[in-house]
Image (cartoon, rainbow, N blue to C red; front, side, top):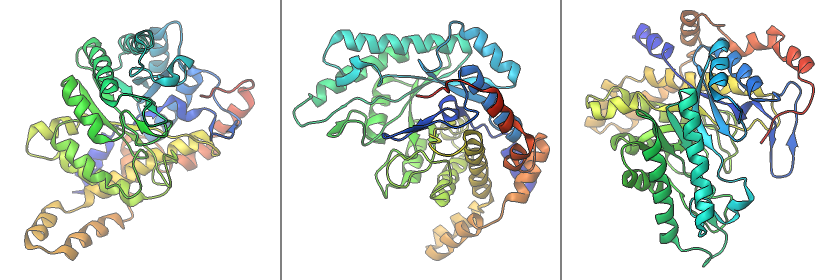
Length: 389
């Protein structure tokens, strides 16, 4: 059994994101840290280092226009030379002044066209870099009752997203994120997984839901949402982080590692489902880190998230699911919970050391990074204005 688990964990693919390596902060202050990348190539350099240390992070997501360059084909070649590939592409539909009252939901047709044109630009970036996922989050919403027509905004949104999906390359998908609050105070146009799901179902098979772990109200059962979306074949990806209050974007496993484990359990169960309509999509889900390292060093924070996801999946794979089904059938409530806790409380570090040995990477990626001198080299070489959002 352990050999099978090592094999499965060796095939993991966890995407890191370019904006996770740069200067970020709160609404009050953006903190710059030494060694922060100054441009997209240096972001790729850091992503490549994380992959060399973990063996399971072969792609890096880009955000446009934060990562805009003149030649995306050359950028993709640069990434390949560093040992990684370009992953998902995210349009920015929230930082232009024109989007003050919405992007794809704006009442002004010229603003909706500007937003759609930017999404289409990002699809061309996908073609140039070989990306197969358009990762969409919109800040659209209203601040006051009466400000907007909910149903009209929904129609505008559906129309724009449908046009985007129709423009996608063959084999590519759009994954549609949701957020129940912020930045709008009264309502957001894609507020929860149901809003995203119904939009995806209206748009077509190329549209799937993206679950951001931080984008839920307190107490929401995210693993239940994951199971439901898996069952409908509409779970496209994750933005992985931790939340204490609201979308803190802390590194994975920092607050509630048991939640991460329970989500992973639903996902590995989906991969093993006898119905190929569930197991097929479950095996192609995008696992993307989405965190803002506000005060912590960027590469250590990213390594912490990648290894936390490895830990969660290792523990999920230890669950004896046949025994769990037996206890469920018997109505053994305590026994069911006991099986899960046994797996969750298992020290999987020796198991992960075997995985890393197989992948040819350090047994302790974070310790290896600290001993490598890479941070000190970056501190010395990267003099100038750091990149940020």
